[in-house]
Length: 154
Image (cartoon, rainbow, N blue to C red; front, side, top):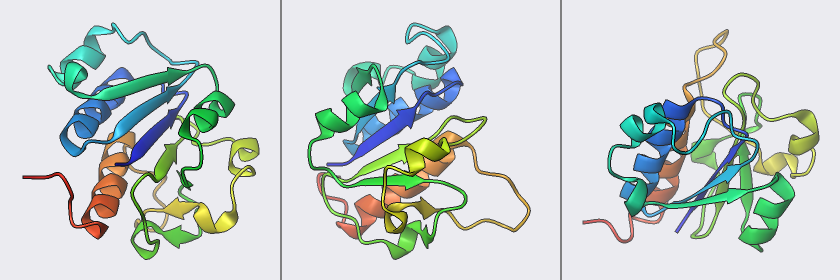
């Protein structure tokens, strides 16, 4: 249905939570190397509980390889400085959401690969830096799924 892309994730519990999120929504998780941890990390396993086998997780050597694997999917980078709020964009099945590193977000050269009207943001109180990665991923993914009336849910 949807794709979540984590660009060089650094914190294992965030990725574990996102694995669980993907398992429960039917989204595919794409991890762009290098990872700041091993997929065997105990913190990642604890956060993901027993959902690892229920989620579709793919690793990619770099972002270019990930984008090739996604084919013609529309990619929406999620950044604090994005132009449109996530709720103002109209999503469709197969869309992909790109999230940056927990400590530094997406590098400028990565953002430059995408049209400005595809870079989305989550509304926040002014002066705050960002939301937790797994929380931000959940907000965006559930809004996209809601727009399609939660297909495949019970």
